[in-house]
View 1 (tube, rainbow, N blue to C red):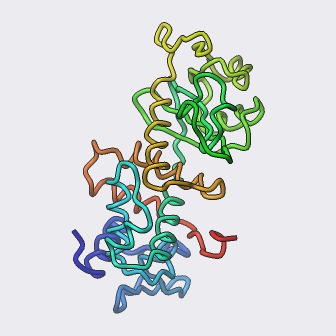
View 2: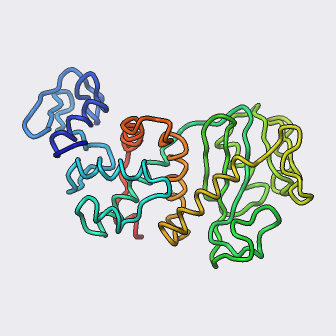
View 3: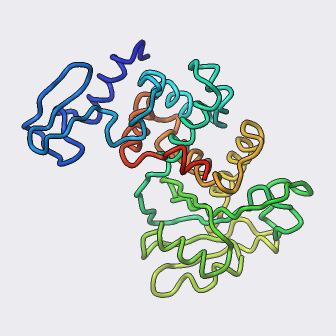
Amino acid sequence: MFPDAEAARAYMEGKRWPEGAVCPACSEAKRITTRKGGFYRCNACKSDFTVRTGTIFERSHIPLHKWLYAMYLLVTARKGISSLQLAAQIGVTQKSAWFMLQRLREACGNDPTVLSGFVEIDEAFIGGKEANKHKGKKLNAGRGAVGKTAVLGMREKGGRTKAAVIHDTSANTLHRAIHGHVETGSTLHTDEHGGYRGIGGLFYTHETVAHGQGEYVRDGVTTNSIESVWAVMKRGLHGVYHHASPKHLDRYVSEFTFRLNDGDVKHHTLDRITSLLMAAIGPRLTYKALIA
């Protein structure tokens, strides 16, 4: 796909700057001087830059074509790819592969989309003991691991999926998270969990299904679609990654939701890579911050 770093650089520049290089520091687009090796000079603010500047690739010693190959593997692997698998595929150390994947997952979370219309909402406890979950919340009945972490999932009917790690499933936490991801005026579909009470009224229309009574669909009200997301996420976390610590879980969640949205198999592979590439523009995750 991209045989060398030069081909990868040309592709990245074409996607990031379709009308020519733009200074990441001051947004100057006209007074730019091209230099050798992919470097540019901004004659407005006197800064030097490359296509890596202001992205997750900045200051990385990994060649750009290996980054693009990693992105290809991430968006096409339905259940995800481990750092060991990535290291073997692109020829880097396992440590470098792990760091690359964490940076890419961080980029997957750069989604400013706000959901609207009919939105299914459900929460799950990743890694939690099943005995602690109310009926209808169990990812794997009778089995589970110590160290549960709550994740809130929201899926727009016929649209995108958002998910976020949350501290708890109290009404205050759930309401705040929903307001941050769902446009007011939308219709929310949830189960009867008490944390959702009061979310309707001035801001939303709220309709429920009573899972505790064995009800899963009622007059078009359901949470089946968002619950299917947990099944995919669980298979990846348990089958590929085996374990994701609470500290890093938000990035893994972002990875899975990205594949459901911009990384969907209905999109051309290059379009999926481009979506991730554009999401990679912004502050980079440093190794120091990652392991802190």
